[in-house]
Length: 321
Image 1 (cartoon, rainbow, N blue to C red):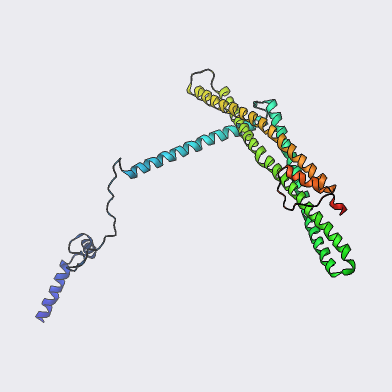
Image 2: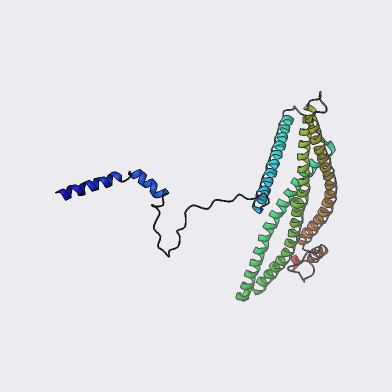
């Protein structure tokens, strides 16, 4: 009994001397007693926490990249800022012009030439569309004539009683097919040249004209800013900045106006030369085909260096054969 009481006291004394659970947990993470046991020859465990990063010196390559990145970002921000300001000014200028509250710079002679050029392009595009339609329809006619020639030829072999008649019609359709292909070559050459003139040559000049018109709006917008700047303080920073912007836009506007005038002059000379050649080709080819003059049709295509896909070796009129 005495031994039992003594053992119970020892257990109570041990529990009394044991620290609380929270203190014990703290000791496990911070004290040496709580560290995990490592076998003598085992490798050290890798920590989940990364090592502290050493600050880089100003001359390090990474810092140079960051500096270039910041400079590039600042440059892009400035570009966007300038574009936004210019867009705002141009939009405001266009609205004021439509409302009649701002005067626009007008070059009457040049603008009349520009409008005439746009009207010419619209009419040439109409001719191009109609010629393509004609070429497409005529292509189907030629394909049908070729099929008809084959059908007549087949019947000529199988119908001895009408062999001569079927053969005659077959040869006629073959001649029409050959010369129809020559006319198609001429039509394709015509449409290709007019398409290049309308959608490339004229469009290139119209692109410069659009740049000129944008520069005109910007020029008037900065001119209005200069006129609305404070005149009582001529040497103020606002007045000097407005003057600088105005002169820069004026120089750009005058340069583009001169470029437009030169391009339109060269375009007009080129347009007359190209259309003269193409109109003569179209007239001669169509006239030769529908009059049945095979020799004239071939001569026309050779004159304009058009490759003959199906040259006709017969002479005279194929309508008479």
